[in-house]
Amino acid sequence: MKRTVDPKQLNGLALAYMGDAVYEQAIREHLIYSGKTKPNRLHVSATGYVSAKAQAYLIEKMTEELLLTDEERDYYKRGRNAKSYSKAKNADSKTYSQSTGFEALIGFLYLTGKADRLQELISWCIEKIEAIEKL
Image (cartoon, rainbow, N blue to C red; front, side, top):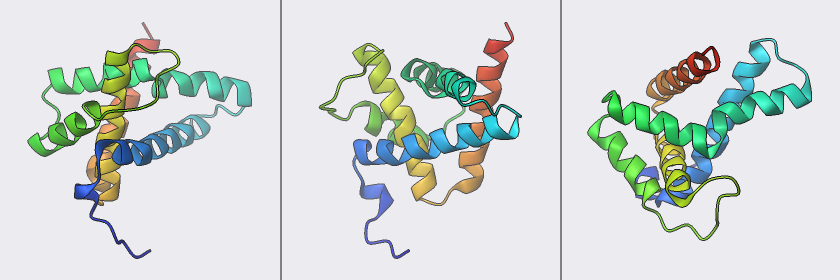
């Protein structure tokens, strides 16, 4: 596919739009490959990974653990600070902004071809969420 847009020039919401799809697909694949195959159970399980609350938690942990590079933090902030005209259904505005930033980071990594780093962070996210579920 010919790229006519430099991903580094995209606004935070465009990056988040892509990141939402990429992260959702990665989580769905993880759940399927983990042996979960019942549709309702898949949906419930996926929500624990992809909800605004889960994404806000994950980006806070990434920040606390100094997991992100300066560039990655910049793209997270680009998404977090973007002016969205939609409202979250089940999250307050801070949580929604953080999750948008999380998705922007994922979108940035995907669109700039940083597949290894993207996989590293997604795997880290899966491990964090699964550790919480075991508590």
